[in-house]
Length: 466
Ligand code: UDX
Image 1 (cartoon, rainbow, N blue to C red):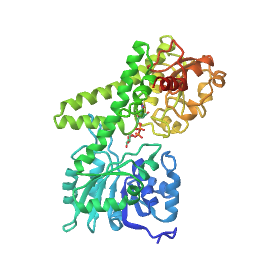
Image 2 (image 1 turned 180 degrees about the vertical axis):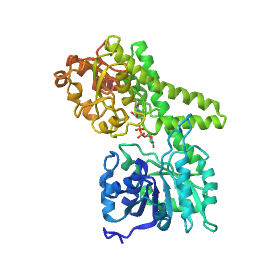
Image 3 (image 1 turned 120 degrees about the horizontal axis):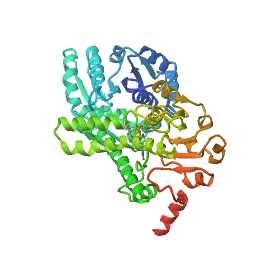
Image 4 (image 1 turned 30 degrees about the horizontal axis):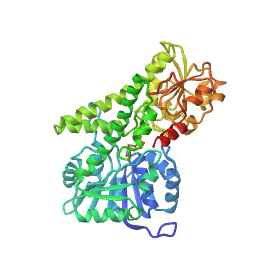
């Protein structure tokens, strides 16, 4: 019986790795009623989590961790033997970063974690991978854990990829649109259906398949999203050259239900700990498998995405009259997207750093990511408010579209800057509103020399045409 008086559900769940994925999965499994033990090799991280303190910002997660460390359904440990002793199902949630050299994913943490667990198992167990891995990993892992497990201990490996977005991690885990169960036996499927019984009852679609397909589903989903964003950015480039408007274009093609509106936002491009490295890992795996077309298409996606950062820097230089040396620039946003403090492969922080390298005095403000950005780029200046970042600036660059930054009042902000000049690298602002307040406004893929109709009037124009 746990402290909240509820008997925990079966099976007991182990989670290995307490990053964004593992911590969220562990807390959500406890929320669903299971007894959960989560392991991380860092005793310091374990102590912080046990005290209900998150090592990163993720809305709603700290509250869930505190609730279930208090209820007794969620425990943290640094010793994998603690999981082996009590859990029946073990979720692997460790990182698979881009390897030091080349584009491939480094799966060493996945193998190390599974092998360490297998070595201390005293009864049969199901290991379920959630990390994003190259196709073929489960097959190799089965051989590795079988070698490490004691004779007579039966260990099965399944793959059940995560699709959670940072900033929405709790909701995406408790209410996912689909569950992909990559299993090799009916028993593994039965156990996973038991774990997700409430999630399935609440409407998540279930796809039961083999582990290789499950592994590939995850990277294919991310590669598709990356391709969609890059397509929007290519259209943006065309719009800019032709004097057309990419936001209206995206809105219009998105009305086709086969296309949809999401991930058609042209601008600075994608970043973060997943999309870029998963795309590159897929390119590397496609190479190994001898699939040349995949490399060509996805290679261009990666290249175009990187070039968006260069385009943004070049536009900033152009707006400043050909050089940013000695120019005071306000960089609004450092996180790779709103809703997170994650600055891994952040296009926003990369642009701020490149402008500094070109001699600009760059002051960054991010509502939640200042600390992480400072740790990554200690030579940049940081401000606690957007207004302070903009003080005496000759150029303001909107790099991450946090709601509070998008809502800034251009008239009020005019009082702080030296020159009212805005580069909206995310196409998140209403150009007309800023222009009417006396600002020079430049977006991406929108003709800047003529005032654009507001978003509302664009929609109603389209409604009239339908
Ligand atoms: C992503 C996937 O969405 C998720 O399913 C997977 O499990 C992990 O990777 P996340 O890294 O949290 O999640 O970011 P996501 O919300 O997908 O955004 C990715 C990037 O694309 C961000 O940098 C965002 O700014 C950018 N983006 C998104 C665009 O540039 N334009 C868009 O229209 C949408």
